[in-house]
Structure formats: C-alpha cells, structure tokens
Length: 151
Image (tube, rainbow, N blue to C red):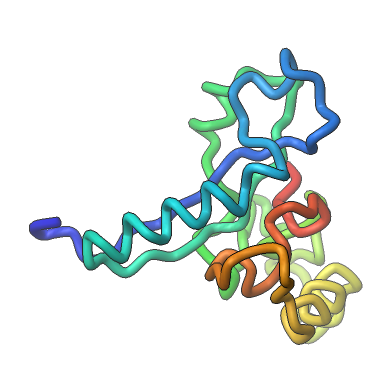
C-alpha cells in the first residue's frame, strides 16, 4: 500500500448467544479467530504493520452505526483511555474506572483490581490448539468476552 505503513484494526463483537437482531452485523465470538486470521494475512500481503485494538462488546442499546462512530476504547494493549473527567480505563474488560488521573497518583490507579486482573491476563500464555498463531491472541482469546472492551 503506497504511503500507508501502519494500520489499526478493531471489531465490534457479540457473544455467540446474542440474538441476531441485537448483533446487527457485529462479528460473533466464534467468528473472531477466522476474521483475525484473514485480517493478519491481508496486512502481511500488503506489507503493512498492523496493531490490534481490543474488540469492543456489541451494545444493543445503541445502533451499530453509533457504536462504530464511538470507536475502540484505546489504540492498543499498551495504552489506557482517559475520559475528559480524568477517569482512567484499562484497555480491556468492563467499563470501570480504575481511578482518576486528576485526583489520584499513578501507583493507586496502577494497583486497582482492574489493572491487576489485566496484567495477570497479559502475563499468562494465551495460545491454544484451536486457533492459528494470531497476534490478536497475545493478551486474550478473541472468542472470550471477558477480554473485550465493554463500554
């Protein structure tokens, strides 16, 4: 791809048991590895560096278009999201503030249970025999909703 060297990918994903009308076109959990394999293959063929953003849990309370406009929670697994009010969200998991960067020191935020749980998942092996060796699996299995960004 001329002039394009880095590409970010993210998906809106739904649990396999979510009714089709609520999924509204979102990928199912079981389809995530196959789609990830295709995306990684095409990125490699195009000779671009790709970064997976954590999948986002489908929210049937809003339209799929609105959810796409909201975008991913963060740009990679080595970033955080800071809300305008200072609340800090880890890259994956429930939409729960780990603290407030405007009112708390970083050590307090870093030791919040959501970041401890996240670091524990990062440190354990995530490869399985069921999927190809996918970059998206580096932190969490893309088929398991606990590793998706929720909200």
